[in-house]
Amino acid sequence: MKLTAVFALLAFVGSALADSTSIVSALSTVNNSTVQLGSSVTEWKGDLLGTLPIIADSTALLVDVKKGTKTAEESEPLDAAGAIEVATATNTLVASVNATLTALIDSKEKFDRLLLSPLIFGNLELQQKATSEMSDAIIKKVPVELQDLARNLVAPIDSGFEMAIDAFRPDL
Ligand SMILES: *[C@@H]1O[C@H](CO)[C@@H](O)[C@H](O)[C@H]1NC(C)=O
Ligand SMILES: *[C@@H]1O[C@H](CO)[C@@H](O)[C@H](O)[C@H]1NC(C)=O
Ligand SMILES: *[C@@H]1O[C@H](CO)[C@@H](O)[C@H](O)[C@H]1NC(C)=O
Image 1 (cartoon, rainbow, N blue to C red):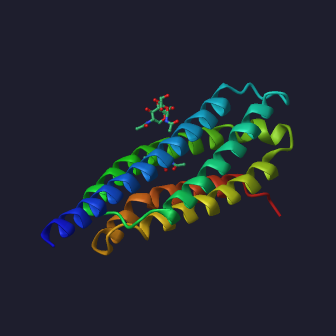
Image 2: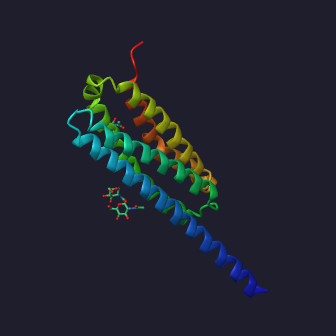
Image 3: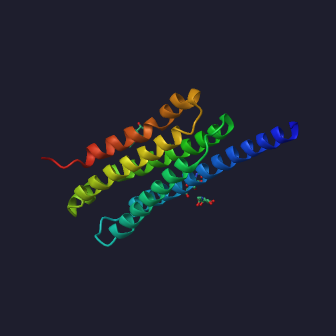
């Protein structure tokens, strides 16, 4: 009887760890695609051909974010230790998203010259929605008493998107 309880506990701890690992790995993938998109934007000279890697990276990022949402949705609830690992990965992502959005905002004039700013605007809106869905899915798995903290942690991502979306919003 006692042994069964120990096994049940081990199985629980094991699965909680496995789930924080899968969410952390999904966040690491999203971080990498975010950084990749940021370097494509930073390296871009403003030519039409150079927008191809930017479009490709931004599509890949959207796919990775959606995969991250699915991973989080399928995850078991996180324990406090798992939540801390996820928080650390989130912090990295917050920094990468900030850098990439800043690079996009700084390149606005180049996109304007090619009349591509409305496309970037639409893309940013899609990305903001997908990212906020991923955050929500992850926060649902965080222990209730840590959820407010988690919301504060991801808040800069959303406000960064707001800034970028405002910068690219077409004049009416
Ligand atoms: C993210 O990039 C780092 C450094 O390039 C690499 O070590 C890591 O395996 C990548 N993570 C994923 C999930 O692809
Ligand atoms: C975020 O991605 C960049 C680029 O792949 C990588 O150098 C960096 O180590 C990543 N950060 C973490 C914590 O995975
Ligand atoms: C990036 O972070 C800095 C420092 O926190 C902040 O002032 C800036 O508004 C952020 N930019 C974006 C696009 O998130």
